[in-house]
Image (cartoon, rainbow, N blue to C red; front, side, top):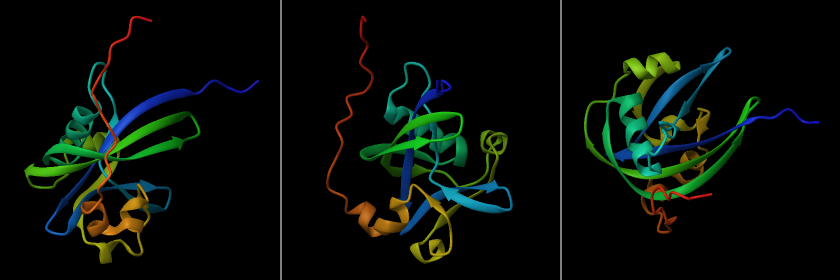
Length: 152
């Protein structure tokens, strides 16, 4: 019998400004990697609200989530997470580590151009495969109607 694992729902933001993308850096053993900001949905929170909150909590940048452009299904050792990635409009702020980001283990926050990412491990991987211009030009949208409450 397999061990039961936790299932999580999360959302994150792909924020592009001046041909650069906002990413946070984590330490993993003896190397680091970059990730677009994001995290778990709070009870009753919409996925768009989650993306906006997580970007702000991890980077200090206020955004407005626009198009959902990717569904990522992540299987980790202790949980499985479905994460919805949104293309977000920059509203305001200066990219910096926050109290929340430090508590989460983030060791850096910065804006990156495509050429700076060539030798980096980056998640979600579409950041490197589509490049910044491709993300901005993405025309398809996933329908997101917010939270639907059910009586079952």
